Amino acid sequence: MRNVVETPSQGVPIVLTASATDMSDFNLSPFRAFTGGFPTNIIPRRLLRKYWYPPVPNNGDETAKYAPYGIRKIEALLIREFGSKNVAVARPDNLKEVVGPKTKIIGISSMEPAGIGFVSRTYTSFMGFGGEPMAAAEFRDLIRKPILRRWRAKIILGGSGAWQIHLAKLQRKYGIDCIVMGEGERTVLKIFRMALNGEEIPQIVETESPNPEEIPCIVHPSIFGTVEITRGCGRGCKFCSPTFRRSYSFPLEHILKEVQLNAKNGTKMILLASEDIFLYRSKEKFLPNREALVTLIRSIAAVPGVEYIQPAHASLAPVVYDPKMIEEIGPILLEKANWVTNGTRHSSVEIGIETGSIRLMNEHMKGKMLPYKPKEWHDVVTEGIEILNKNSIWPLATLIIGLPGETEKDTIATLELLDKLRHSKVFYVPLLFTSEEDCMLREARHMDLKYLTSLQWELIATCWEYNIEVFVSKSLQRKIRLAAMVAYALYYRWKHGRKVLRPIMNFSGWNKDRTRQIENLGT
Image 1 (cartoon, rainbow, N blue to C red):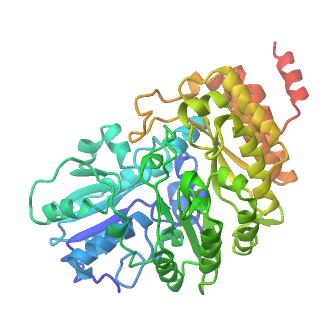
Image 2 (spheres, one colour; image 1 turned 90 degrees about the vertical axis):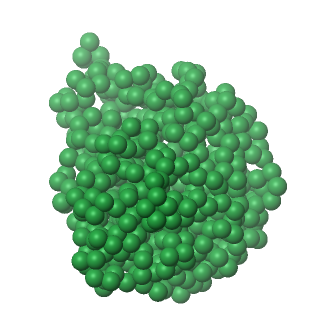
Image 3 (cartoon, rainbow, N blue to C red; image 1 turned 30 degrees about the vertical axis):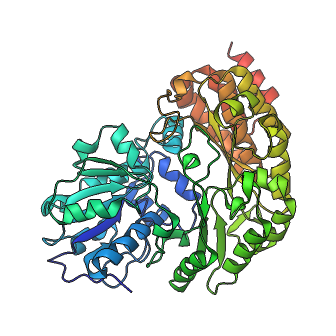
């Protein structure tokens, strides 16, 4: 089944789209998509669009062959309600082909429309120059396209980043009629019916969580071959919104139907969307279900056309609780991996370490390590990563810098945890704490670079020092050292002060004793 555009001049009643960064598979690298939070003016965007985040291909009728998973879910609901001829999903550069006088609604999905999420705030401010985040710049270019307003269609914004436009007070400036925040399956049809009937629609909608049976299978392929395995989490981390949504797992038949749809349409990769893949069909008290998970992974790997399998998110406690589970799925994930580092093939998954402070774990994320206790967090992290590494899984791990109430003792505890992981295969992503709109800590103050202590700078530098040692070739490491020296001398010394000298040298892989000598020379 395909969307059919009646004529370019008449348009389609409902058009769904997203910005250039959201409508790209970043050359089949979901983790490269993190760079949507990096400054946009360092490299010309015309080159970025061509080589770094090229657009997804089109169908013959100028609709997008692949689209973000969230758009595909809403599209499935709309097609079921209004028919396939009345719904089109298009890239931003093809809107003129599908928007016309018959268009009543333009629905936009975005992950990072204002550039104020964890990654964007962190790495744009670290760079200190180069303009706003790429994702925010591309969203602004999309929302300012004249075609969006030529026929007075209602503009409805949704997606995981919709809260940013509300928080940044950009709704009126961007001419957005309605912002939908939250899961859309139960609520969005009512808003679209009102708009199609010419009724006034609310400016802000906070949705109700749907029942699992209300969530349809997608009917067209998704970017990265994304397929939802579980939804919600329930662990209760205060800085995160999915942790407060009811957790449930989708039936295997539902999942395989979407996998087969994606594979049949040439997506190659299947990205397993989940807050914790290792808790698929989990038992009580966050205990993993080995049989169900192994069956899931084996079944997906057996689908013809599936070349790569990429789990999205996972926690470490289930790994420690049932290491045999990882031993059984590890070889399958390795066979279907799309990662090679310095000649070594491995798989990967995103995990959250967040902090090494037991006090902060008790304060902000007491359920993160269940069925274990917060005081066991260091053991859970070190044992969990050791088990993953033994099974050729090199995780990407986030750490949050500047959690509310963080002290120097807390930072030292995180540095101590990193020291225990010194020889592990982990890619660390330190992030500045961001109080997102839909989490318990939404009233807390953002952490900004100007508030970082020397120890927090040291923590960030240590993360990137370890990353370089594991993921960068020896020859390139030498070039990074030289570039870091030049950057400090020409810019960062004036931007952030002398307290960043040692962290920058550590980030570049310089010997710490050598760094102290440089510091002494400057005093």
